[in-house]
Image 1 (spheres, rainbow, N blue to C red):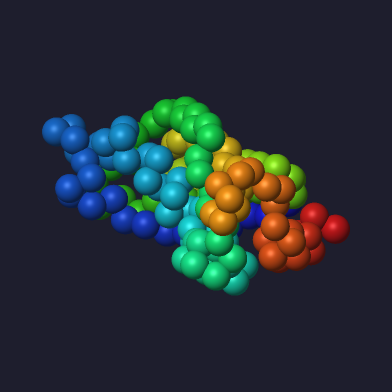
Image 2: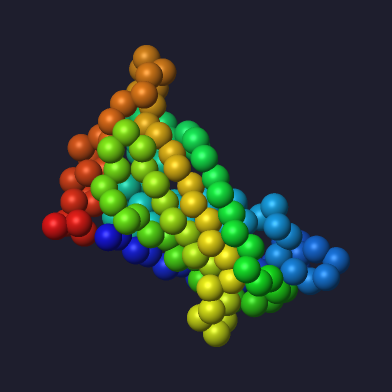
Length: 136
């Protein structure tokens, strides 16, 4: 299993009239979590797209709102991979508040596209090589 955590503060412009993180911003937190998790592995979306010609479009998003995040609160975006990717990569996300309580859960499934022919491919070795040690 691979797990990564990233801290972020809820900004004023991200909240609704009640001072809660607006519900539509949670998928952006998933994206932050994914990007920072793979960056810590030495992988960037930019390198995947520009050098390896691989895109990772989103296939499925699921959200579970448990409690609100509030203005100026520091939250933790926890990103988890429970299994090695195959034809898809399945990210699990937990958002924790300042006390460490899980206040939100999300799941995102992405697949891999070869940009040269716009066809689906299996997880590239470049990604598998970085992740395999976490699943040994």
